[in-house]
Length: 160
Image: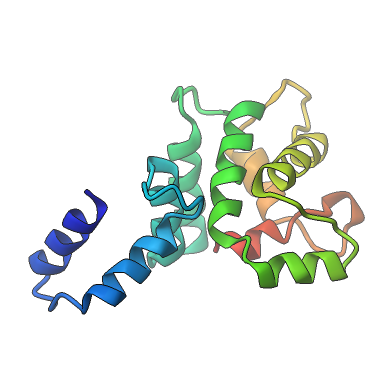
């Protein structure tokens, strides 16, 4: 379905379909867990990385997508799903190597997502209600890197 939709998108914009090897490479870019299926989370994360727009526009769009129950907040579970999806897209062997060289041991996207979500809520959930508002999320996302309490703010660079 992904390849058909990709072909339709190219055709709709009068873009010549590339060779099969390029189409397969695009599919592989999105299918981060190598299960031969591009699921909704992989699609959303891949598109958010590739689309234009301001960082603020992207953050608002990502926040809205991962606010699964549309209550205007991101729960710990929603944050874990969000980060797992992002890390599946951006956690390449090179990125893992860089993180390991910084003393951060990374074994999987899920492990990193779990640690990052916990740290995010510890530092960003300022009213301790167990959920993040858009303001809390943006504050965490834009946190200064030199503030040790925001150890995982480089997620911003990985996403945008």
